[in-house]
Image (cartoon, rainbow, N blue to C red; front, side, top):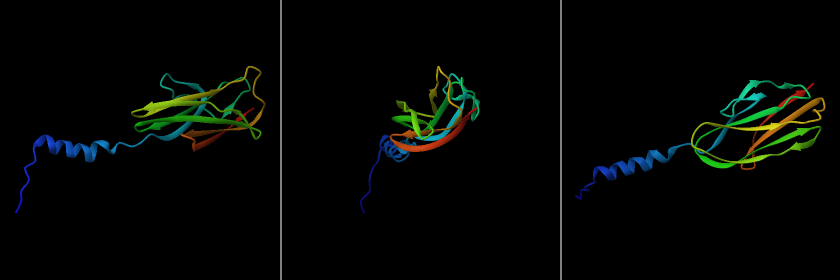
Length: 130
């Protein structure tokens, strides 16, 4: 019968390879919509109803480890009114802020914002300007 001698550092390395690499990849956990944003990028005042003069914020909240491209598509009356993107690289929970503003004021009506991670849709929120 053959026996194997394995050192403690080798066992640690094997255990780490089995468990250390098990962190979750970057993924979107929520979309926050509101009138203000906190220092950490999360939305401070949640709402789905805005005045024409408001700045509209959406925070794309992610968890996990990785990098990618986050983007949002702002829509009104079937037209794209904004489509910003940001390259991100995170190691834990994080919030990426996007905003929409208009010096002339927004037309009243129903809007949507759709978020994307690496080009794949990860959620949509609807809101109203009144």
